[in-house]
Image 1 (cartoon, rainbow, N blue to C red):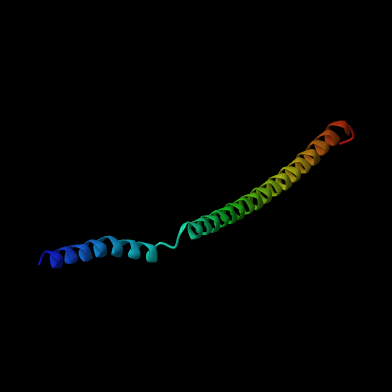
Image 2: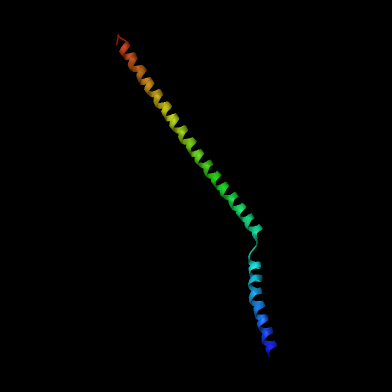
Length: 94
């Protein structure tokens, strides 16, 4: 009876230790896969950041272009107004 109790205890101990180890190794893909996943995540984050920079740069360029054209037109308009004002003041016949 003692040997039967001992063998039952031994089998229970082996199963209680062995089953979690087997279950853990089957669900954990391993260090190598973790590193691959981290690399892919880093790549995707860098691509997203690059797209954001491209979009922001494009918007800033268009805004700068618009403001520059607006300033050039306003300058031309004021220059023309000033020239007409000087012409009226210097033309004594009118």
